[in-house]
Amino acid sequence: MNPPTGPLTQFDVLVLGGGAAGLMCAITAGRRGRSVLLLEHQERLGKKILISGGGRCNFTNLNAGPENYASSNPHYCKSALARYRPAEFIAMVERHGIAYHEKKLGQLFCDVSSRQIVELLEREARLAGVEIRLDCRVTVVENSAAGFSATTNQGQFTAESLVVATGGLAAPKIGATDFGYQLARQFGHTIIPPRPGLVPFTWGPAERESFGPLSGISIPVTVSANGTCFAEHLLFTHRGLSGPAILQISNYCEPGEAVVVDLFPDRSAAECLAAERATAKELRTVLAQHLPQRFAQEWCARHAPSRPMNRHTPAELARIAELLHHWEIRPAGTEGYATAEVTKGGVDTRELTSKTMGSRLVPGLFFIGEVVDVTGWLGGYNFQWAWASGNAAGQFA
Image 1: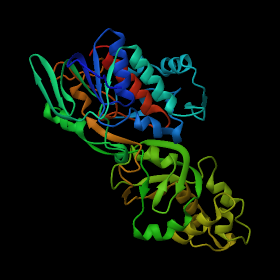
Image 2: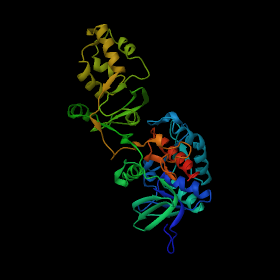
Image 3: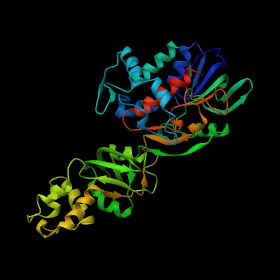
Image 4: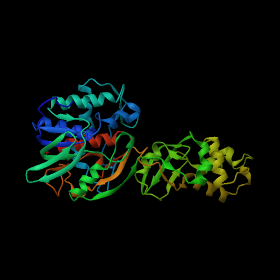
């Protein structure tokens, strides 16, 4: 990808980061006739794209809208998402002959491999005249009246506009760093404290001893925290809780806060218990008709010691039914950035313009993708934000 001889050192646009957002921005700017240099510190482009969706890349979601994103400034993402919709990226996927399918809830995946999305973006970048340099590590970025300069292990490059698309802290094994936050602070920007997003919860020692043996059990539930709820599956692991329901609610549950789990999301627990009230069946046996047996036994051991149903009073059964619909759990923590899908928090969007993704503090400076305080739901929403924010900045950088 690197030119063999006589490389240019001055460009219109310098994009830092060769992930989804950076590539989309470079493509969009290049199509406008801007000279674009994209710098990627890894040996290849799109590493996070390659590992996404189990290797098949959940590249967008048909239902993506502002309501599917968490941010300290929830209105910020509206403009970019409205100007680059899922249908536009889907059209590009189809133009390149990539077969895809809808898995569920609007989630679109490649039929074959996530590598196809990276190859699509590389081809589009070449067609747009974008120069790409890999293994290019930036050490110093400076700003002057003449524009921006980046000192790297491959030389110094200058440009009128600088786009920061360096991602967040999630997935450190593939090279995630805090470089984008460092640059933002260097230029006077505020950082909303980053933390792992779309991440499994961990138990404390006592809960791990009780629930650890349930690893592998999955239950359809509704989880809620801070006024937001998700109806999906919860998965027990050796260390805590995972599954789509937990990953989703992790974006809305602050550290130390409780999550409420409805174990009977589509039916009345009170009615289910009342139907067996006259029988001699044990409570755990009745619950095992609706929940996995091992979980029903453990749940009863902790919350409602099991005895024959006909020995429970109506008040006791009412309390049990209430607990089944409002099982409160308080995680000890999360598995951290190592298993997080994304980073929550980032560059404060109140210091950026929603139309261009440009800095309100430094003309010519832009922040896009995961480095910004906009975090999507699980299921292709974060890729759609990458395409939309990259497209927005590429139109103005």
